[in-house]
Figure (cartoon, rainbow, N blue to C red):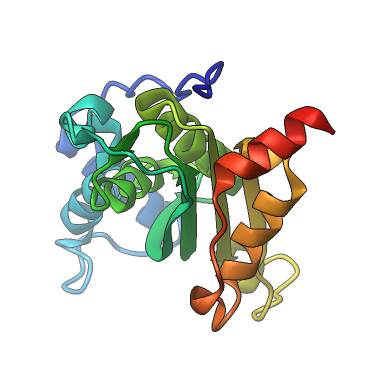
Length: 221
C-alpha cells in the first residue's frame, strides 16, 4: 500500500535583487561596525560576500522536479534503503551564521526506488537556503514521500550551530538532532529501531528484515 498524504513544503523562492544591492548592504553593514569599507582589505569584501551568499542560498533557484529528473525506477524491493552521513552546510535564518553536520535518509520502497545520488542532491537543495534545522528535516522527508510514494520515510539530521558555539550560550561541543518519521517508520517500532540502530557506529552490518512484514504486524496490532 503506497504511503501518501505528504506534500513537499518548500517555500517559494524569494525574488533576488541585483548582487549590487547585496554588496551595498554589506558596505552599510561594515560602516555600521565602525569599519572603513574603502580600506584595502575590505574594498572587495562586499562583492565577495554577495557572491558567497548567492552560492550559499542557491537552493532557492533549484527545482525539485529537475533534481529528481525522473530517476524513479520500478524495482521489486521492499526492504529499507539508507544513505548515511550526507554532509551539509546551511545558514541559520535567525543570525545568518552557519550550521552544518550530517543527514541520514531512509525509505521503504513501494514498487519504485529513487536514484541514490538524488538523495544527497535533495539534501543540498534544502540546506542551501536560510533555514532552521527542524524545517530542513521535514522538507527532505516530505519531498521524498511526495516524489517516490514509499511505504515510509525517515530522516535524521545532526548539526553543530555556530549561533550556539560562537555566541549566546557558547557551547562548542553541543549538537542538535532532529528527526522526521513517516509511514512504517512512525507506525512500526521495529522498523524505526532498525533504522536508528543502523545509524550507530558499526551498525551498517546489522541484519535487515523485510519491512513489509513489519508493516503487516503493525496493521494487526
